[in-house]
Length: 80
Image 1 (cartoon, rainbow, N blue to C red):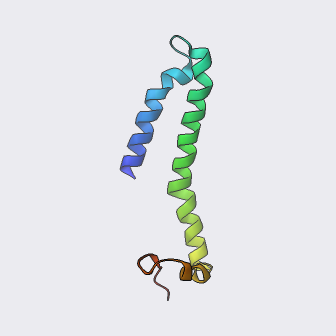
Image 2 (image 1 turned 90 degrees about the horizontal axis):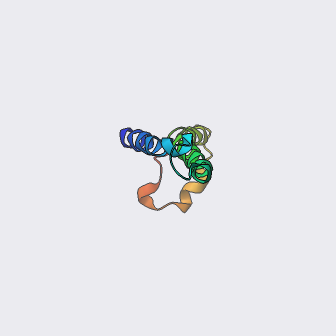
Image 3 (image 1 turned 180 degrees about the horizontal axis):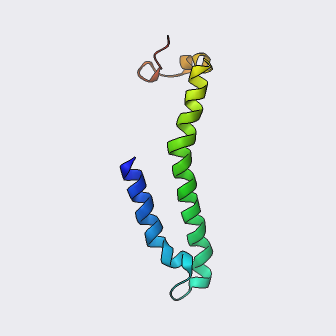
């Protein structure tokens, strides 16, 4: 978690001058920088919050059990 937040902060700081419109050619780089920062924030939130929460909900409702046969033995969840 620490490495993900550190990487996200560093990338956002590195792209912030472009996103704010400083420097030469900023009118062409600004939309790209805003899109990249938004994508990094969205993908980080999906990876760290939404995916584990969705898996937790599926696991508590035993919806993972039918798909566990498709997983290799080392990845199978411990079923009750």
